[in-house]
Length: 423
Image (cartoon, rainbow, N blue to C red; front, side, top):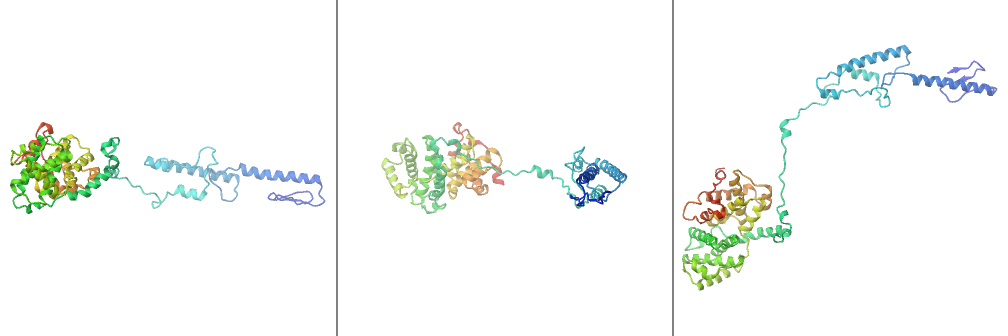
């Protein structure tokens, strides 16, 4: 508060009004206003011109100029000592963490205002261990382990423009095949119902038909349908031993009529049987077989499943021929009738892959399209490996001799996957 010497007028610098007497002249009022401006100007000059520690608000009482300069000098020295102590960290990463946040120069607008007492406590005493962020070293083994799920490939994308591939409804087709394959299967013990036949006779017949099929250069679908017709007929009707070869010839004739474009004539079938049967015998057996099967010839066999699973496995020509060799060995063996058609095809593809690669391999794409896991295939796979091991021995070597030619790349002579049996 400033007291004027004239007329006892009181001027308060902290207020915005001036108290004066009614008798004060206008001239004197102007002088009082000038005095007020001078006093406020001095206050503003003191506020603007005051210098404190950068980024620190002084909360202490008013000090003299010398005291303020002394405090400022002490704080600068303490900050310099502390900063020199901090600027020598043990590790470079810690130096980055302890980098001071006080701006350089006159960048006072971006400063953070802190209390002097809080600043002294922070600089003189480091942060307690319990408040520091714990340092955990990353395990190098965890960084190297990356779990990547194997994607399921679209195996029909390459045939999108092929109308014969039926890409639009190929999934529905194979779903229908899986539902109908149980009608293609026969009881695994149906041979016990036959009075004059046994398993060995069936194996001899099918081994001979495989050679006949190769000599006539027929389609693969024809061979698998022939064997299916024989098993289904024998499971429903008793046959004498001397008529067994006739059953095989008639089954081959029906399969050719269903699958082939050019069908062998009846005289050719009589000729390959060494004229053991007549033309009338062939026609009569054809009627009997069709009536027994109720003319139901269109049933899925192992072959369509085999082609689909080979495509899913992205198999090459060698793998395809080896899988065909293995599944034809299974056709001869009566014991393999207890496995479904799709399982036999999947096991043939899996065994062929393992034989060529020398290790177990069954991709997620193969498992998706076959609906069989690797564990579900192992029993049938071991049976196929054992058949491969003894394919060149014994009397029934028709399949081995067929696949030991240059036409099939001598695939029958490759080593069997013994590690699948021993595992």
